[in-house]
Amino acid sequence: MKEFNTLYLIVDENIAVITINRPKYLNALNSEVLIELSEAVDLIDKDPTIRAVILTGAGEKAFVAGADISEMKSKDVLEAREFSSLGNKIFSKLEKLRMPVIAAVNGFALGGGCELAMACDLRIAGNKAKFGQPEVGLGIMPGFGGSQRLARLVGNGIAKEILYTGAMIGAERAYEIGLVNRVVDSTVVLEEAKKMAQAIAAKSPIGISFSKKAVNEGTNMDLEHGLSLEVELFGSLFYTKDQKEGMSAFLEKRPATFQGK
Ligand code: DAK
Image (cartoon, rainbow, N blue to C red; front, side):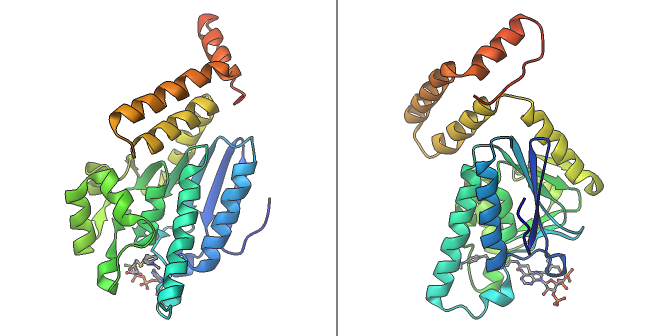
């Protein structure tokens, strides 16, 4: 696989792990990280063997402590829009990957880091993880989709509290409000994310990718249209080998082997 300056991409047994690697700066997102993240997502998208992705940050202190403030400070209005639009495009690309993406969050997930975790399908947090959108303390607001994804995940009231106060919340509170799926000991975050990725990788890639599409696209529709989307997706699964294999395996009392076809 391609070598990057600011991240690692490792693919092993159908699972890709992207590790953002700027631990000295708490893995803050500068333009180079964003561009390389986009390239890594493109490579993953083109690899038909990959069934789940884990996104994490190097070191024990941070997942990602936000957009890089030292790079952002000197931006003019046009550059700030460009930066925001670059981030938004990449986060959306990540969100639309056909396979699930799990954020393995150890330490700080702040600002753009919290937004990056929210662009993933699932979040596993270490018990020492801290989440927050501290942008208002910097005289800005979230620029990588935070105001939108946070409100959709936890509801307007709690999202507004997090956005307006800029205060950090711990992993347990993040679990309570539905911002993370699970909290585990901080020493086993990646291990637990891998276990979840393996469980996903054993199931039908098409069934999973259609479920992802149904949730992601259906959430932006009214119920009637969302249900119609589900009907369409459900029906088209009956063209696939995965559906035939899954149902035959059940009736023959053997484990299914899915090809994603
Ligand atoms: N950017 C750049 N450097 C950072 C950083 C960041 N976000 N976070 C930490 N660092 C650097 C620190 O400057 C320090 O560098 P040196 O001084 O050693 O050179 C090093 O990482 C270690 O950090 P600390 O020494 O501060 O470590 P502490 O344990 O004392 O504190 C902390 C950890 C996470 C509480 C603290 O570092 C902190 O508060 N960091 C900033 C967190 C933050 O405010 N994040 C949100 C960033 S704003 C938009 C596009 C995007 C966004 C907004 C708009 N548009 C263009 C519209 C997104 C914005 C953000 O994400």
